Image (cartoon, rainbow over all chains, first blue to last red; front, side):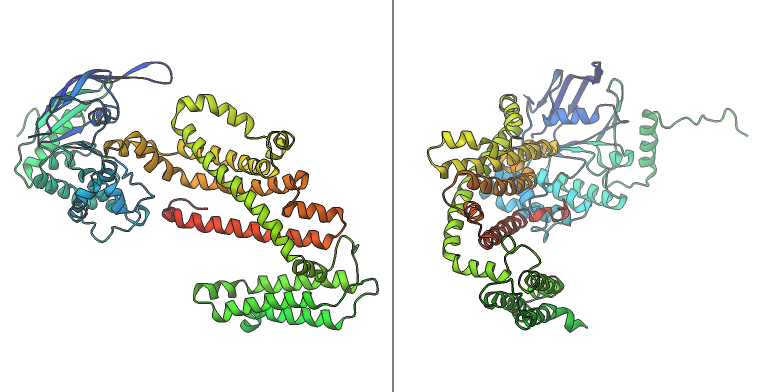
Length: 259
Length: 313
């Protein structure tokens, strides 16, 4: 089993324009077992995206270390797929060439050509090979970007609010697709999200974070059978629980007396 | 009504021919016949008709759309003809009749063609060098901070000097006039191409490079497969600007020191006081510039087909 991530005492500080030191993340410790689905949730400024980008290797922690299967992460690599909030498809390439980009960059296009068709099929984009990104809807572009991140067979898929800009129905559709792909392909998925329902629907564990400085408040194990039902009573209980953790709920006191 | 509109060039041409043949020439005007003028008028009308009759789909629609334009161009030639031959309202030395200009275009066509080839050779050589070095310099400026540190100030200082200002030095430094002219062309193309390429790279969304890195692209691969295509629209603007300023540079350079070429031809004929030849040279030059720019547009549309929905020109 590959795709286990160990985050060890990670602290990240920035220096802002006023020359003040801002602590984005403070003493983060997290063990993410292989093949699990983890959501990072919290208000903006809690450093969840910063943490995800550090796992991707796009930025380095100020202190502490992040290891993938025992190896310290120091730069981006194809074993960690990344899906951005915007689809970020290259506008000058067709959908097919966008998905093929990683394979070509690594020089394994010839051997792995069949994978592109497989993933185009998987995300439901068959027949759109020759289209350019601007000719497709936002949802389709995000699917293409998912296929692009997956086609190199990463052991970890990092998702930085990838569905945030989509309408509710498209979002639910793609959530199901992500779950289906996870079942089929076995990989660790770590997702940053603002959407509590999305986190409960997808995750094995939800990491709740608070800002200034970014810290982990709690880790909630979601013990619901799959496929999950968004209107199920237990689902809603988790919803309330997470909101309470985020200080957005649980204000209503029990009545002091009742008749 | 519609037939009048689409046949406007033909009607104009018939009217123009009638005026040219029936209205007597002014006594001050001395030149043989009207044959070349009529020939060119007829050629324009016939070309238009051929496109209209035998053009397919788009070509035909576009030709019909341009009917008013071509009809009016022919009428303008008619007015020019009336002014210069029928009434001689302008000094004939500087404003020769279209008849004279057209006859020069034909009688001097071989020499004009040679001059043109000579010019195009220099233009092409310099242009290619300018584009290649411009793109390379731009890419290096965009991606290497070390290169930028040393070369950026140089580009800023040398770039804005009009290439023609270098003529006194260039003529001394280079052994042949061809090389000197090519160098000036290259310089004219190089500067805008460099600046806009670097600018284009600086404007690329950083997330494109992040995508590349997470997909396993090396630095070289990022530059080639992300940096260059993403900066391509800007590069083209740079090349366009460079091409236009290279025309100016070339003609000025030829007027100053060359022994051959279309710019030299115009200057030489001016000194000979034969303005019909000057106009003929100008016509040839404008046709060539028009063709070059059109070709560039076509190439751009082919390469940047993906831009259709992204950037408006």
